[in-house]
Length: 275
Image 1 (cartoon, helix red, strand yellow):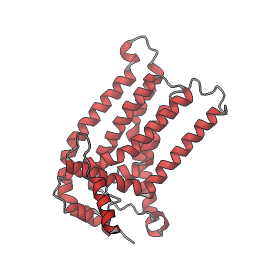
Image 2 (tube, rainbow, N blue to C red; image 1 turned 90 degrees about the vertical axis):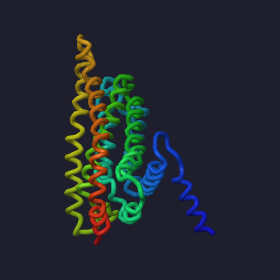
Image 3 (cartoon, one colour; image 1 turned 30 degrees about the vertical axis):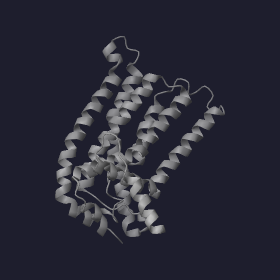
Image 4 (cartoon, rainbow, N blue to C red; image 1 turned 30 degrees about the horizontal axis):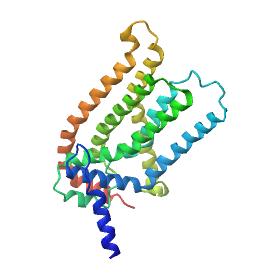
């Protein structure tokens, strides 16, 4: 009876509709979300930044910074943008890495493969973008950042998530590997995981550079007399958002077809990558 109740609860948790999503995509999204939420790495990547953000807020409230932060509003949005994407790059660049036990079952579902990618991208969004929103809110409390800077941060956060999703879908289909909870404890895999971590950080740094340029333009050109130059940061951010959205829509079709062709190879890579 207890087993039946748990199965009924698991079914009801994923048998819900989500706005703008078809039923099968919504079910996959919820299933992937619960899978990510239970993963210990995800929890650690959430808890550490939250604790540090609360620490900075407490220090500011206690007067530890004095008036030194009054005019320094640019670094707060940049931290809000960069940290979550550096943190979650391991999962954003390898969306099937935690599916070693369930990928074979996913292969049997009569669902278009591009919907797997959509569901994975949406399932990770609450963790990455939620952390970004937390840092933006914390930054606004710390230094009373202008609404213009906050709006720019939100636009760039959306752009970065779409951009990381495009690159992540490509890497996930082309270069999948298993995310093992104890990978760093295994000597034969430790070096590989270190190399993957360094490469992911380097790639994330390059991908964040355009957003960094927008933030720098907002910081140094916002007082320019010419209206176009003065709004260069926000206009550039909007252009990045539109281009990343277009790339994401095109990439879904391309990477979905590649996923259909390579799904068995992906399964062998993530399920056979064991010690």
